[in-house]
Figure (cartoon, one colour):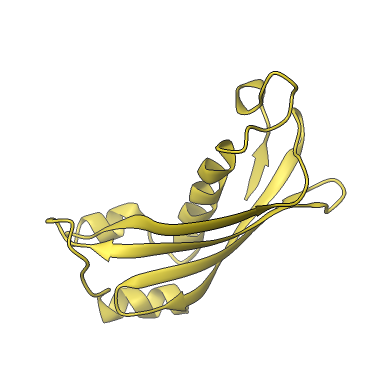
Length: 127
């Protein structure tokens, strides 16, 4: 997915604020679901939710006001209750790597307890 950097994404120096990248990573995972024909509502309608359990981010290069970034999410692994994504953000113009991340999400039931990912949903995610 492409993400244009606006002024509200940046700090006083016009550099993207480091915490803002977490939003971009979230948006890329949402796009991943949509590419699989699903959405957050697919899980919610079945009484399931996902929460970020762990996030490792390696910042490689700054993005600036006006840049257009390419934010990607690739499912690396699916366990009984967890999804692990490899994610990258690149500058669209020059391909420069902005950051790499590994993000783990856990599947939760309505009581916020870890619960197995239904097989049919897991198959769609891995397809």
